[in-house]
Image (cartoon, rainbow, N blue to C red; front, top):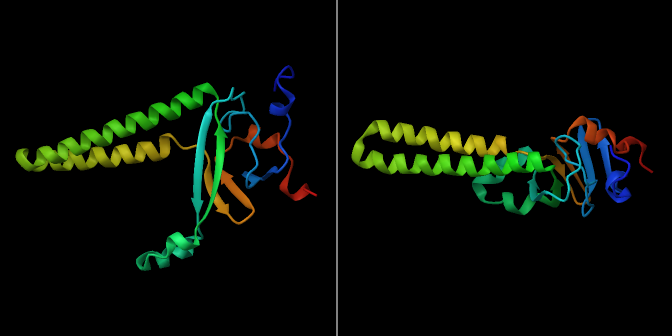
Length: 168
């Protein structure tokens, strides 16, 4: 970690902790200005994430349309270094283009037959998978009224934060 950087970017933020491999933050708290993927300086790059979470057992409410009423959310700006920011953007663009190509193949299946349909379906699924996994930053583990917990931060990023169990 560089010492000539802005001290506000290099010291742990109040309201942000680590609980083993989980990043814990008080809702409304800004994350430290390092990339969550590699711990390099983020230089102001990243993405505003609007994360949603609900207890997995609540999927039972899905058929009744009640899931929207019980989920919790948190808005967090996720800092990324220029390299990981570019990687995330390329992944999102590539997955979108792949899914659109799949839709073209599905439309071509109307005229061209079954081969285009299966190929189109495979391309749409590949695009959706690539977009979900390739552009992943933080993944919510639990969000309640006061705190949000995420997986996906690198160990070096978590190591700079105080321990959740040692908070006062």
